[in-house]
Length: 441
Image (cartoon, rainbow, N blue to C red):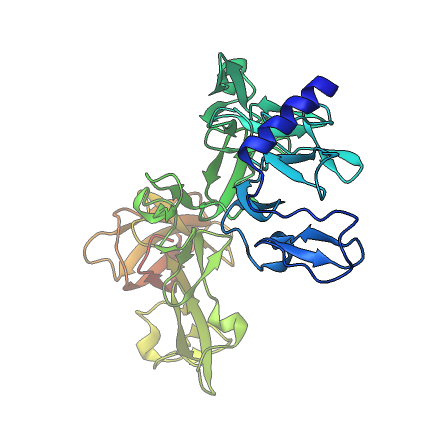
């Protein structure tokens, strides 16, 4: 060690010592002695003392340079430079020698620098003293540093190369590799789960799905359905109304009305709906919705009503009951007329199938030995009806031809009673009012 210090002292004497320093001996008088530039007189020690320009001059060194004081002056050296003190017994004052760090003796281990009497770690990463590649990260360690690759990268040679995580099938559906990372994507109808890798079904119905009416969630998708009375449109989302009335003419007995999602049946005036599709006649006489006056009777017919006078007997007939008129034998004009006329009313529908029995005639009184015959006396000029006799006391009025209403017939049906033993003949008539409704119901 002594040899080394001797060599260093020689170098300092040759290169760094400030010229012109005047040394004062202990025998010099205790008076002021002029010192050269860079020194000042120290009255206590009676010597010329070096001036520390690094402390006395503000911003002695600029930029990244560090100020180092030495004998009679100062040096601006890089911050990585260090100094050691080399004592010189023949020197008048203590001398400081600045040299480069890689040439100076450092009492601290590699990766440390002296601070006072201690050694502290050098942060090579902060001081940019490392040799890490641009793709690497410098990590300071105690006494040294380490070149590491960021997360998502692996070291190949001296470079950090992105790891393709998608090769390891981290994602359930689709994987997208990113620099230093990756992301998972899901197929339509799914969304990434909380673990950022799995895919879970999306309930589109709870998220305000596009279905116009009803939505059913399925795995990965959804289905739209429509309410009754609607069809799913070609777009698969909206619903269009079904015109049920256009499919069949038998949905309603009279008239079909299409409505959104449904249909309804209507009946003509004078009729009311029966169930959902049939029409039935409104009996205005029973519901007291007619407008017949006093002295009149209400007669219900298909689709309406008729007001008939209570006394319908014409001369020479007289009324003996509500519907019966009698022609007294005491009146000469009654000799060739039926003894009695009974009024009856009935209503039938249009387009009734034929032949059809529509009214039965029944004798109210029978005389022993009498033979009874029945005939249509008047009102059947076009042959729409005929009489079919059942037995001696009854007959049936038959509709022979289909008739279309509204139409009205007044038929006089006559029963003639003949007793050949007594040479007795009499007759009675039934005046039948037949109303044909405007519809087949």
